[in-house]
Amino acid sequence: MAKKLSESPLFMTDNGKTKFKVNHRNTFGLNYGLPENGGTCPGATMGGGGCLDVRDGLKRPTCYMAKVTQIYKGVGARLQQNTDLLAEKTIAEMTDLLRKMVQAFVDNNDRQHWFMRLHYSGDFFSTDYAKAWVQVIKEFPEVRFWVYTRSFDVVEYLVDCENLTVFMSVDPVNKNRALEIYQRFREKPNLGMAWLGPGAPVDHRWVVCPETSGVISNTNESGACARCRLCVDRFRSKVRNIQFVLH
Image 1 (cartoon, rainbow, N blue to C red):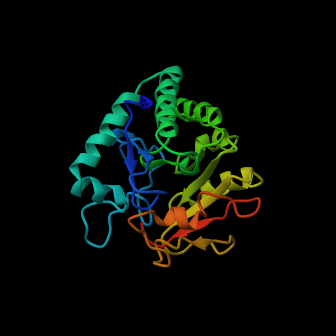
Image 2 (cartoon, helix red, strand yellow; image 1 turned 120 degrees about the horizontal axis):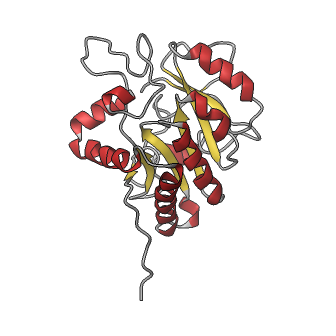
Image 3 (cartoon, rainbow, N blue to C red; image 1 turned 180 degrees about the horizontal axis):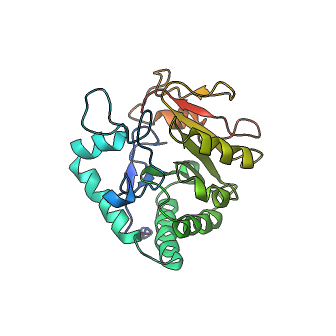
């Protein structure tokens, strides 16, 4: 009799860039945007170079999820479903939901494919939510997680997870605050910065994401992240700072 695989009410997505195999649902997302607009990104940035900047005559913000959800209506429905399930829950309730999701991911994938990206859309919307993730991540030490976040206030909790790589999403709007937090925790080997667009600060070293620069392409079998792994693995003992030339 075939093994009954775990299931979860939270929905994970097969992403062409982050997948390590065909049909690899290894990304998790929530509604993007500011909380007052129904999103989960309290650190979203407005203005020139920000993730919610509106430029070049376009009506939608820079954030790539604005385009994705406009084109693919089903994606927005799944993000709303995940957001509704976690919103206004206690730490214990969120921990239980997230644990079931990661357990289902582990049960449905071989060990060689235990790589999970948090928040391809959305962010850590509260300290309690971040703490719930910290507890779950520590319960699955053989799973490699990575995340990009503008919720800088929760970085102090996230960097204690040895199997989580944390990238602070930095842009001209939040640069000063980001550099302040980064300096505070820069000795943590799993903490790096990710710069959106051109103009990365010259007093820090950056590696350009080879997918956004066209050096590595996604294929039907696996995404560029599985082949590059700069955001997944650490370079020697410390994660590298990444620059995304396109978003």
